[in-house]
Amino acid sequence: QVQLVESGGGLVQAGGSLRLSCAASGRTYSSFAMGWFRQAPGKEREFVAGISWSGGNTGYGDSVKGRFTISRDFAENRVYLQMSSLSAEDTAVYYCAAAQTDFATYYYNREAEYDYWGQGTQVTVSS
Image (tube, rainbow, N blue to C red; front, side, top):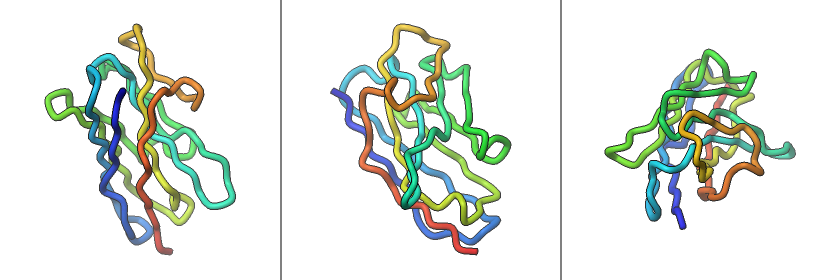
């Protein structure tokens, strides 16, 4: 089992920045690819960013490319999502997820690939 706890959400003005953090505990952290998803009211959950087990490969959803950066800290067992140039369209609940994998360089962008999920953290961008 892996437990994921997100933090760092809140209210921010349009154009501002925010950093989300996801703390992982439980099973060996380094054997999981990690990802961030988000779900806005009335919409389906969508892929935001993913990072491989090795940390060397990352991928982003089209709507956040160039604005968001995913990273991971093996020593702290954390994964981060740095968000900048935020707009009202980024308002959503953001979820951290972990995908057990044998492939060090893969990241995943589909919900079905992920095995564990956090409870989510609310990000609200005021325009």
